[in-house]
Length: 406
Image 1 (tube, rainbow, N blue to C red):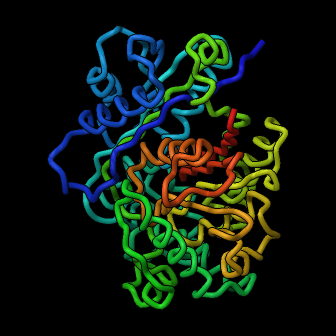
Image 2 (cartoon, one colour; image 1 turned 90 degrees about the vertical axis):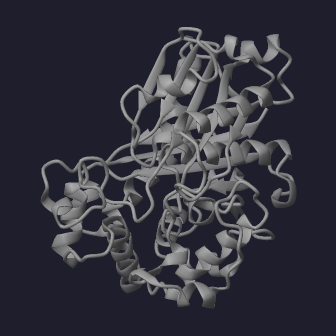
């Protein structure tokens, strides 16, 4: 038998440019974890397990982080699933609760990063490079190999290259325009102006985004997520815990959740669109819909993985928000902002809120919890009852989570 799992408390730090603040990863974790526990009204002594995600800190950094909250001897699980690490921590916490292993679990994610463009990941070189394409140490070598075979390999950051080449393919295949890609960045920068936790809070027009420096054509700097420092956390509990502690008014149900990884479809076509994860995202969404009994038509607000503007467009298609190839027209129509069918990335998304890898998925969950409780302030989506989070990491993992106000 399984029990329902609920998020009853969330917290996060402000996401900041690396090295802009004199703090360590455990300082971030203490700030976010303390905020989540306070939001839930639950003392750390009630936490039975901790699932902790990060990508660039050393082994057992999870223990060092939660020791800032208390020394109670609970099990701590260290997780790394590339950019999907935060949602992996949330999923681990949910599974502990649903499986009856624990009634109260802390999911925590953090990252202290270095300035500059993200490379090919741990083991692939400090900033990435040609060795990432075929280097045996890189866990994403096969993905970059797809890119190199179709497009070659240039000197620009490898993650920007593979997503930029996916954008080129989408433009060639479906007629997507650079203006439509820039519209994603303009929307998310506009949304972040109302988010005090966002790394950037400046509004930019489509023309300004197009005029920004090119990272890898057609992607400009204002269409790419930055490296960031920050942490986020969630307290996940059972229905019994909710009722015993009078938390129904704080509780948001994890109505459905699924993780998928790469299949042959990711590589068989030789397309960067598939190599960067659209098939994984589509499969994860389908499973999450089945498990929750909800569909995209039930969703009001979405936090999705816009690491680059093109990935927001690819994710629209994967989630069933539009037909394949129609995502450029969808964002251009205004359907994914306030006054449209959905509000996508009211937080500003990764492009403007920031992207500390281990914290990203949990920050998405925090935003959705605030939205579903009606606590999002100036960025509140009116009447939001169902939220969807989408978090993806190359290598690969895609996690889709459906949250519903209890």
